[in-house]
Length: 382
Image (tube, rainbow, N blue to C red; front, side, top):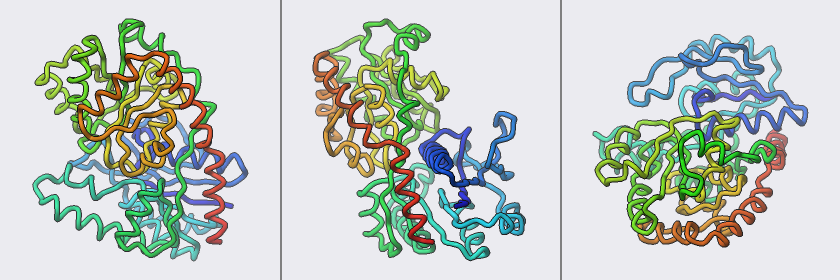
């Protein structure tokens, strides 16, 4: 089978969408299928040819400088070339230029069209367009999502709460729950001691880790208020915030305002092949408070490396956290969340038990198993 994927984001832009595309494309290729990807060109992308990826000229977005807008005209001009490749199916990954170009290509080739719903825009847009009423933006996001999902043959959703949300919006096309799996071979062997040494962190210092885009919708403000309370019982506690994004300056200011400068370390993006694994492993507890995740891959990554999790069970994270294995589910209340963090920090035996359970639990999220589920969807449409 030959599949054409389109996305408005991909590496070197680091986020869950890029990771999901890479994971599925790799595992489908491993079982004998051809996956091509159209993705934006980025100004500072490392040079070199990328197998099966065609970079499309793109331009700067003033409201979200990390992202780019692909040239739809360039993609339209590629249609004769794409037609000659005999694709079986088009899979859209994002709802902007990729969506409308994907529709045009699939209709032009007369082949099925799938789209993955990665981003819960209802709880996202008002952070980037704050001058417009949040209520209006939520309603617009619902209409936008319903319209786009009803334009394709099937919609992939990463979790059952997301499926239920789209049903409530009025999406009528088939919805298939297929989470992004985890590469078990890659998420092992992180060296936490090496990372602590490199960052000048004492071996016995209690460390919390948060990995993700440093954006307003990730609710990192809440984690700083949790840290305030944890510090009362554990004065030397450190929160490592890994990633970049539009909320970083605000969070640095808030940490100063709360008197947490010595308890917070902003690390930016880390190399995913080694540094990120070491960083996870350097943590005693992984903390996560986003209310907008459609899945929450970082929870699985932390658990695979034996780092127990304290998180809110909201939207997509509910499916991961529901069994209560390797993780403690907290309410969006700083007192409750901090109490669960302290339960893990102050009881090493309990923390080790949770770490072992986390490693065992994530085996059910193996990427090759979930790639087979995606392939079953493709076959059903063909």
